[in-house]
Length: 257
Image 1 (tube, rainbow, N blue to C red):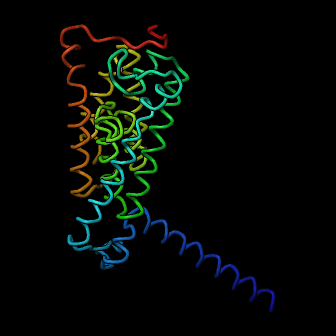
Image 2 (image 1 turned 120 degrees about the horizontal axis):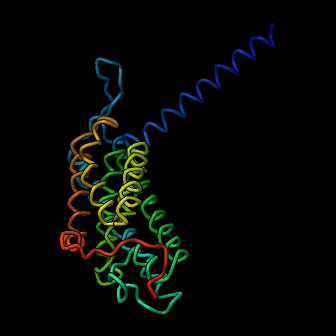
């Protein structure tokens, strides 16, 4: 009898620990430290828990997040790798863009893969900081900060890349299913046309259209979504002109030199 009571208590404790862990995960990904400290816990009619946080706390939190993400995004791995490994500046070659595609065309697959990995990891760290500080809205804002940093890096005279890898990594961290769907569309467009720029632009334009179909979003997330569109399209303005004129370079795994 005593063993049954002990077993029941252990199962009950394990269930309580599991619930506590789930609440901690929910807090981290949806509320963040600011929401937990300064928000008011409430429930809607369906029993869903949410936190109301005054804007007086939200605004400083978002400023802190975007500044930290910008500094992380400014670590431009294409420029860093080209200078350290090849003793050159990638921005003086090919398209002049400090990103994965130009690294592929200039130095080959290995250099492009290292650039992709670096840009991916810096964005993941930035988004995790956003989650920790202010939950899901903070993650979206961190993603925007990272894209801005990647495009205009403070460490490299404000001349960086186009932010496509940074953008898709942000989407992957905030909405994995949508990111995978956009990646499939991207691959299909690139395989059909050989234009990476066209695939990037089309996926950016589809992002806000598809976002609501992959989960409800708030006003901050929606603003960030449209900011991604503006940044990606703006960064590809020269590509859009070349596409229109039929002069855009087609993608190839071969180095250009």
